[in-house]
Length: 315
Image 1 (cartoon, helix red, strand yellow):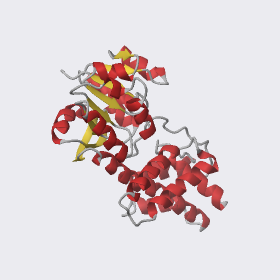
Image 2: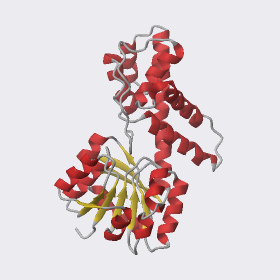
Image 3: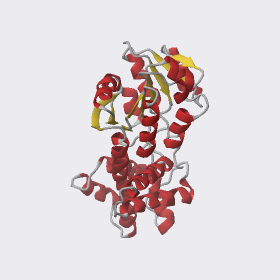
Image 4: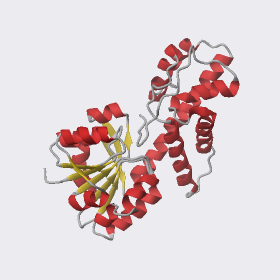
């Protein structure tokens, strides 16, 4: 492999991606993460640890970012001794975070001035698929950049969708997460309605599972929740879900789009955060509905699970 790859953000999703890039034979460099465990694991597997982002850009041909969102991406790019300071002709930066398209386009322009390029490739699926190399990605890139980045993405992803030029990947991901988080909000209210009107939850789940209302999100959240009160089936933090809906609403405001469902979904997520689930998962919207309505939905509660803290990608 001729491309030397750098990786920033070796957390729940990034560790699996970086590991699979190493496994595909790419020379890999990483920078220190706030949790040293994944960095140390990657170094053990053959990665090189560098001191900072400037060095990562200067020494690598392609740099992947897999962090929480736009503030973290912009800090890595624009901060002191950031990627832009070390950018060189031919460098490619691939942002796998869920970020704001307008920021991505500004970053792309700044890199282009230095003879470098930018690709947005946000992810879908979970940390388990990241470890298995079976992620989905939605890519915004020029055609020649897409050809260059595809082999690297193939090391990490089962399905690769080229959505158009820079920004198209992040736009797609925000709409995608609007749908998935919309499902989660609807499901939580629906189960509350079942509990309040004495509809049997297990039988209701059977009806949905056999019909057109079924979804992957329903199957991730509901069976485990109604069987044991475990709301961690969808391993996606409530805080990051709210962040993504905030980005979505900002994006559609620029069109502008006449629609109120995006804000309704965001408000449902904010409500969950404000009711005590700031460290919880999307499934904790069920707990929020219990508190709001004074209705017991689940047979027994579990503590709100710890959400993803640096990057997330719902199914």
